[in-house]
Length: 173
Image (cartoon, rainbow, N blue to C red; front, side, top):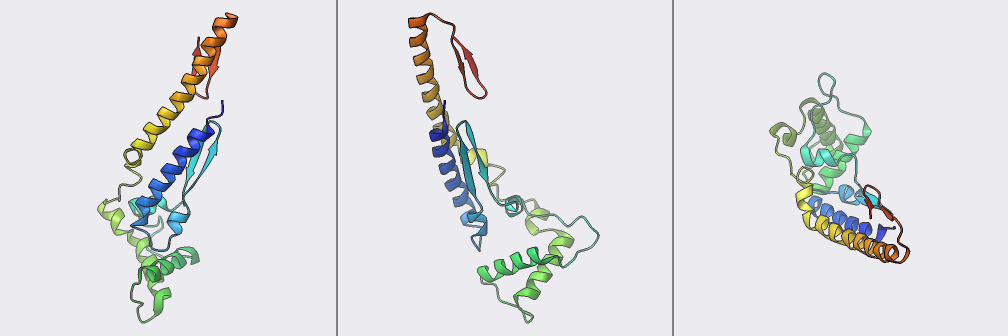
């Protein structure tokens, strides 16, 4: 049976909920635009940028000794972030600020990481989407009930052993 309509509704709602959570803590929109979903007939996947845990939990120091001014990607990302936040550019400009922040993050980690004050978006995500989970369960139970009802009707007509299979559940009637 194809459950993709139920999973499509679920993942659309969850994607919106996750984007709403990150909307208040992002500056450039890159984090929000990285969030998407894919749906299959028996499930789906919610995807986001590899950096989402760093936004939520902070980032520890780099594994090497001391800090480094970092390669281009982190410096560039921090520069764009600083500009989008409207931070005052120091004498050397945003590039110098980004290099300095990259060095400090690589050496010491971020404040959020050091204090353990995560945003709670990922850690409490199951609680944030409880309603969506309930809606999905109701949606899927309707599909399963329909399948069971039809199976009973067939069983009564044909008097055969009938198996109902879903991805992780097998009901023998």
